[in-house]
Length: 163
Image (cartoon, rainbow, N blue to C red; front, side, top):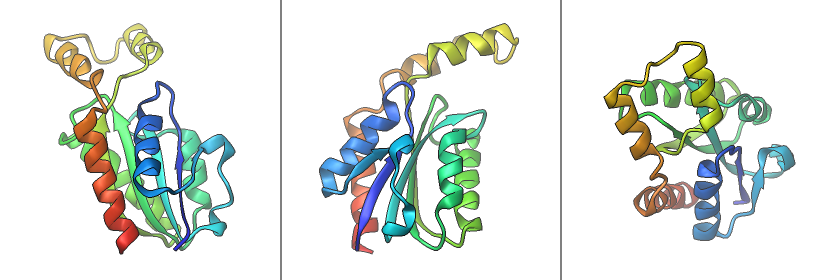
């Protein structure tokens, strides 16, 4: 089965996960701006960073071009990966991919450092005040993806490859 990894990354978080998947599998890895035609592959790993509760716009555009494929999605976000927010992000990615007749084999989300520019925009717009809880969550997010995240993403990607 011919597979590849496509990702979008601003701070390097999602790229780090994508490169770990490539190292674990030998599959080629491309930034979404250089992504090949999805029709050339049977299985795609699609990586995104979460913006406003959904996959970034560039990755969403590529996802809409993926039709009738087996897909594994992965993403990074500042929220806790087991939070209701993260679940909604995963559900949105899954729904978008399924609209194209794709079979979503699995999905994986982990924390990652939030772009300081995004935090500043949020501050200026008065969104999400910097509470002690939020500060602690963002500090924890900045330590990810860590080796455990990368290992888990790789393990789940390997299961998709074996499917």
